Amino acid sequence: VIARFLQYIPTCLAAIVLRRRDGDAPATGFRLPGGPVIPLITVILCCVLMANTDPSRLIKGGIAVLVGMPLYGLSRWMRSR
Image (cartoon, rainbow, N blue to C red; front, side, top):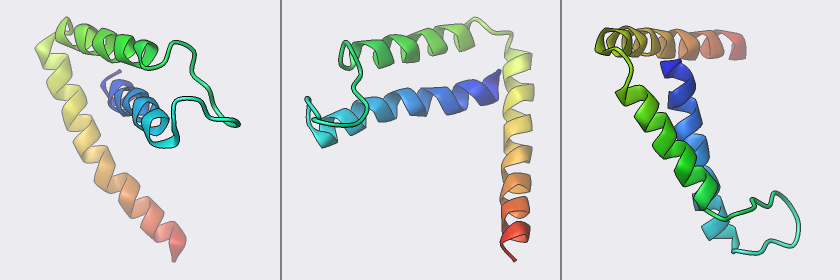
């Protein structure tokens, strides 16, 4: 669950950044109803859910993510060779 939140929160924040960078009313492409309201609500909800999680689970999830990141990078590097 921690890994999912660590991916989902930046995705929600990216929706806000991309909307500002590309203009409020893009002619084509992804259009998010409600502007930044929906991504902000989801980020707040994710933070609330993580704050209400057992701290030992957060630590275990964080360790799993920290171990998995170098392994993922190594597997990508091995595939590219």
